Image 1 (cartoon, rainbow, N blue to C red):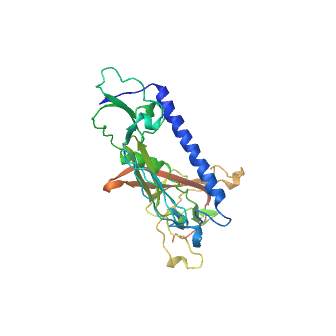
Image 2: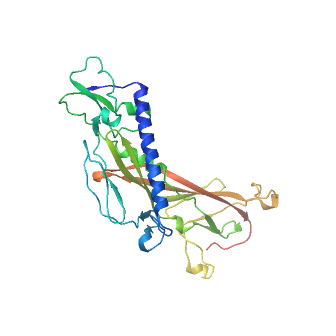
Image 3: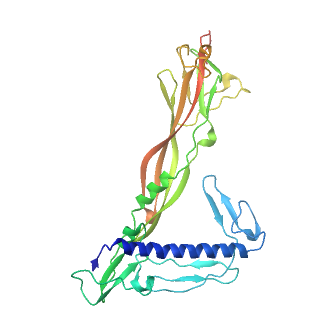
Length: 326
């Protein structure tokens, strides 16, 4: 096999070819949308009936089309062709196995790819890998010269870890909302309860796909909250292995306990003031959630990625009074 990087013009031909195909698909979808009667839809959140429906698991939204139909069948050289089912009009497109090398002339009618590269075994022909993706230059690498009877080259798909990293970068992790008790003014030598909204404390996941000339792989990245680091503003930090326990004003203090607290030993006098009034000086407080990131891919592949963090902030005025520490 002579694997050749072709001039940019070949890559541009590929891009133009795919741009035309994309435009055709958009036209098809537009016609399909216009042809549906009022009230019909491919999917509807929480809907029922023929319009399709979506189910929300809390972190992943899965939607299904309400358009029914019988899957068609078909074949194409090198890995299957597109087919249209009957019944309700559902369309099924079979995806070729990658890499999928087809004669250059079948992708670009009237062209043969030009003369063979120097030193190429002849007879032979140019072939194009329909799975090649990217810009003009990288798509041109999907064009190879194959001698007659020569097997097409094997191209491995991307490492699932690549798709996992992409998925992790797309995670939408919430920032914590901080709550304190006492809430407006804390006191020296009195334990300050610290917690974040418990609704934040759950796993979130997203799935991404990575593709190359060898095909595509999917991987799912899952973020799980591990611990919260509180910066109390007086030079100290507190690490809590959970969101903390809300203080219930309806219960006696002696019947409650917290899993996350801090006791100040000095007042906040001289600290920055949120409103500019020196009499309202307060300690700036932040809470940072550290999320552990794990991923799973096809065929049991799995791994871990660097942790991520999200942060929220508030402030607390701390005064000096005689108190009893509970």
